[in-house]
Length: 100
Image 1 (cartoon, rainbow, N blue to C red):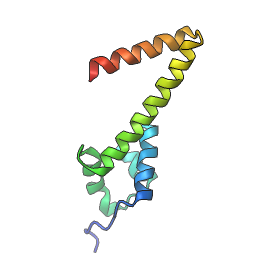
Image 2 (image 1 turned 120 degrees about the vertical axis):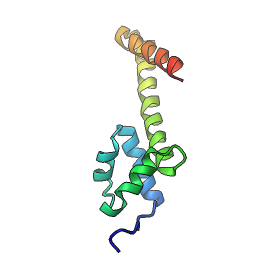
Image 3 (image 1 turned 90 degrees about the vertical axis):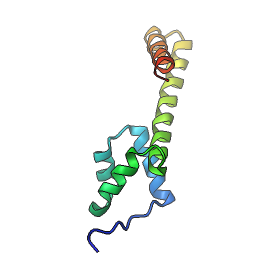
Image 4 (image 1 turned 90 degrees about the horizontal axis):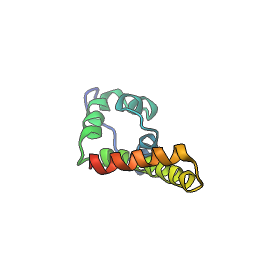
């Protein structure tokens, strides 16, 4: 059936969602990169935007992992005396505290 949603979110697929979250791709790019079937694009887009869905949570996990890696690297460079990294890390910490 053309209109039926046939896609199931396998563990392998959800792991890929984490990976695209790390890269910060938007939903349109995620659909293309992960080869979401055309008949499932609307449902996937809705799940991608729904904070209660597993897709949203996996994507957010990827985003959080990327932010952690960046913050850890900036912190490491700042501790070694890199002034630019120190300033960037402080800016990110300020934004985290004031956007939460």
